[in-house]
Amino acid sequence: MFTIGDFARFGRVSVRMLRHYDSIGLLRPASVDPHTGYRSYRADQLRRLNRVIALKGLGLTLEQVRAIVDDAVDVTELRGMLRLRRHQLAAQVAADTARLAAVEARLRTIESEGRMTTQDVVLKEIPPVRVAALAAVAPSYQGHDIGPVIQPLYPELFRRLDAAGITPTGPALAWYEPAPGDDGDAVLVHAGVAVAVGADAVADVAVVDLPAVRTAATVIHEGAMEDVEPSMQALARWVDENGYRADGYAREVYLEYCADAPEKGVTELQLAVRRA
Image 1 (cartoon, helix red, strand yellow):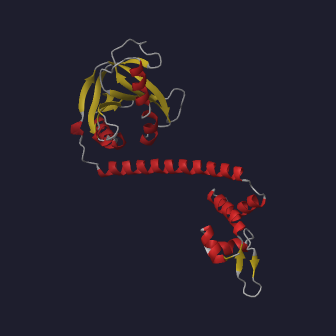
Image 2: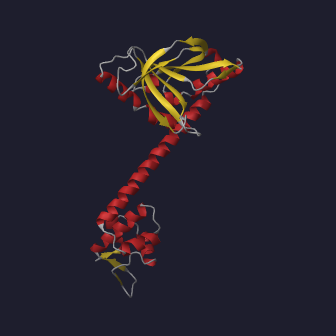
Image 3: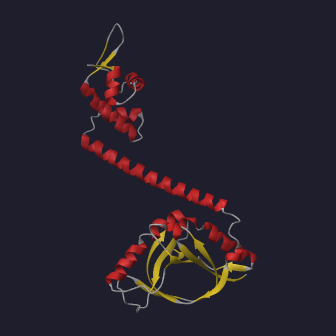
């Protein structure tokens, strides 16, 4: 038999917690001295304590925990519940991390306001280009939605081109359009690279001709794409101040890209515009 203090140490819980569990009938001591009121516990009661703590970790109330342990949940069921909760917590952490990254990126945008002027914007014509591309749908045009969708496309695209013996003839690029059949914020993300092959050169890769853009407002963005907002907003100010209207999404041409050091990236943003 163990004193409540010893039992708490073995179970890695507080004495106060054990007293509370006793008061609500969740984990009664093996015996209570009628004269001193001291509680004593057996080693085999750690089994119930372990289940109580694990079920609490699933986010259940103590009343729910008691109902489950009293029904003698077996190890297999408990393991399945814990694995499910682990998956849920991991997804929550990933979502919170993505939200934090988005907030930090937006804060950097606010802090950089005024540093990038519209004098950095160049108006020019973009020639047509033939590209090999893969596409996927992102829930929205926000950075935290675009990144996880577009990033896996490039390794897969280059893998397929390499298997077909095709060497790119220019930089990688990305372009966007509203997702077909979607009335919300979803966008169709295209990840491509310039090539000089026939339209049917690769069976599992689309080869398309991007038409020329007669008038494009362009700007060079230096740094990671997660920090592209200041450059994008410089384009927006230029368009507004010079009497133009944007025509669709900006195309991204990755002049320099390093997966291991995205902060060293150099990207040209190309926004088709027309007179208002």
